[in-house]
Image 1 (tube, rainbow, N blue to C red):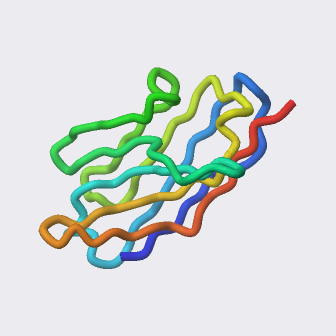
Image 2: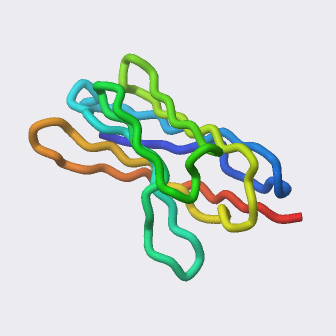
Image 3: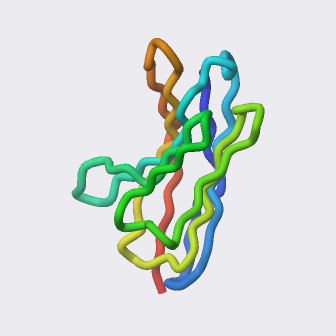
Amino acid sequence: VQLVESGGGLVHPGGSLRLSCAASGNTFKIDVMGWYRQRPGKQRELVATISSGGRVDYGDSVKGRFTISRDDAKTAVFLHMNDLNPGDTAVYYCNVVLGFSSVTYWGQGAQVTVSS
């Protein structure tokens, strides 16, 4: 499975961005799709995940502001980010987990910078 992220960039505090991740290859095996981020000087952390059954999980710091969605063909996952603040500045990584094997794939990362 190959993952390509897009949609990162610079945004002012209070603004919005949408990240997209396009998956290719053996996408029919994908179970969970999601986003993680790595803030400067911090470890990688959960942002949001969505399973093939529709279960959604969010990191505490983004609940109520970010929304994850995916297309039914399991070829793309999206992250809608609202009310961004400088603490959201990070490299955002797309992640998928295959069913049964639990093999994990990562995208190359998309930089999101929130600054005035």
